[in-house]
Amino acid sequence: MEAGALIMKNKIREFRARTKMTQDELADKAKVSRQTINAIENDKYDPSLPLAFSLAKAFKVRIEELFVP
Image (cartoon, rainbow, N blue to C red; front, side):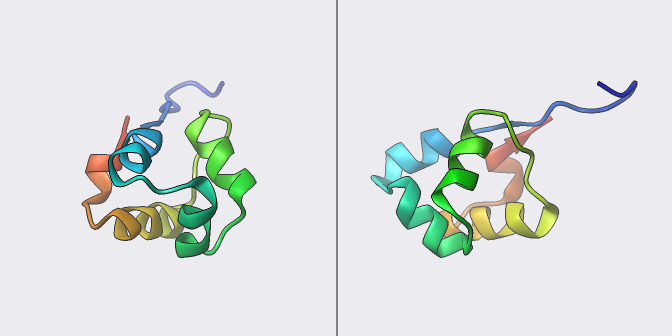
């Protein structure tokens, strides 16, 4: 890992559970694959800023509520 790089944690799985949304449904809303949602939830992939905003929009929350450095 690069010095000074942030590890971004997310609460996407938690928000999906609250809203009873599947990975497929979230992927459709964010216009990405289910595999992308899975990788983000498992901290294997940090989404781009536009994708992070799309995910927040899907849950109708602020981006800071989904992602925590």
